Length: 600
Image (cartoon, rainbow, N blue to C red; front, side, top):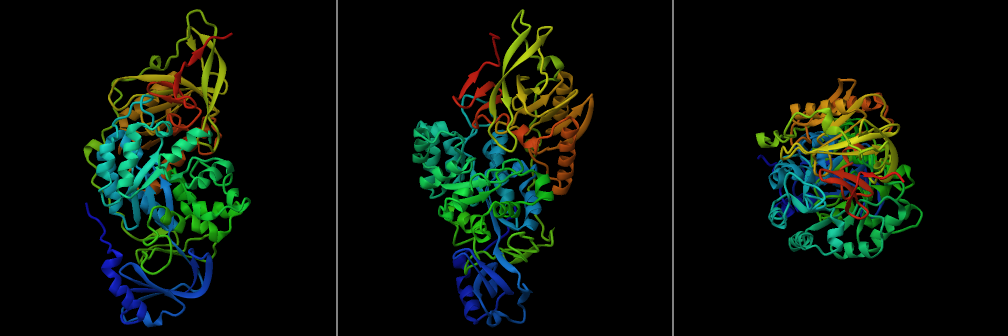
């Protein structure tokens, strides 16, 4: 692994002092810009930033005393100088990209720091997979901090993962150089009930002096929530309304408000600041999950900041929520998140704070992007064969594997059905009366069939259920080896033959996403690394993803970013109803429920 060396503040303090006082010269000076000071929430015109060894030496009205013959001078020409943006909670795997290609995609958007939880790969490859992600992250020219995954499986006893994460794994990872804390603690019932394994992971993190990430995906703000907060999670991104945000910050947590490809939770929560007037220091912006199409076509954290401003947030407050608030939360306010002496010189030049057009991006004192083009190399890890051979379904699947048998003599059944909610991670627990033909339950109207195909241990297992909300028409199927969080193969379709074709196709290519209609493959996104990621350039993957989403529309789906909804239908820690390789899970009670019930 080739890490990009970067000096610590104490290593270069003498040189920073020398530049600030004029006794030595800066490597770079950005002159005549508007200094956006997120410490004081001010925009101060006619300032300059002097940089040495990739760190800020001083921010002053006149930096002429810092300029020598070899100093590179960048004329900001009255543009705003803002700190590089920080994504406080996200999963690189959700971009369908490796850390290198994800970095290449977001650098032109002004993201210079990311706090990543690689729990997707942890479910497939365990601690070894986390280490691979961590190592490639450290090779990048921007700051990618790793949160050690906490929950694989996310809900013990309700799903089967490829690997399990232990408290010993967490303790080991806390010694790795790029690990900043514990990833989202999704097993919120475990924490509320003082599960020894969950508390051991939290204790190992706190002993290392690092941050415990939260994930409280329940509307219950009573004793269960109180118990969760008492357990130690320091933040939460699962809020969906103003009351959720307020409850978290009142209890000393940071409320992370997300705008991902399909999660639109900023507008409904930011009113806690814009209307209720709560202290904005404890509110943070993040993306959680952004696929490659969003990154290439719409942006990353710059998109989130613009959205927050459009929702009525003061631009300087929105910038605080994407910079200094994040840095402070993770104990890095002396390293990143602001333009102040000693900090890493991560700077964006933009002509306007509201539209946030990112013209120039500087990371660690070097120009890394200009006018939407990444100008630096993002090195790749040498992913081994073990990371590329992870889809094992055990047999060639047939239509019969996707049959849902009805009770003998039944002409109709009442089915428990997963209801998709547009732009939200939670689902609805619904019931539909479905017809029976030749002893098999038929998915009709707005109801499709969903199946989870075991892909870690080649058991040949297929769990069948029903889902509503996609609007698919005709004979079609969509399959994906991205199925948060256990990442088996998830298949949604209207026809069993198409479902078998789609599932077998992904086994053939080693993972990814495919859409079939009338026996023809409309789109394929190959994801050869852990069945989750591609190491191809983001634009290539985005083009494939765009074709995949068009194929979904061609099959009748009108949901916004329906792929993200598809990929979360097996996430058995977010209410109300989910599918796992072990059955249909009611996440309100964390119990299995029958797929079919008698018609009264």
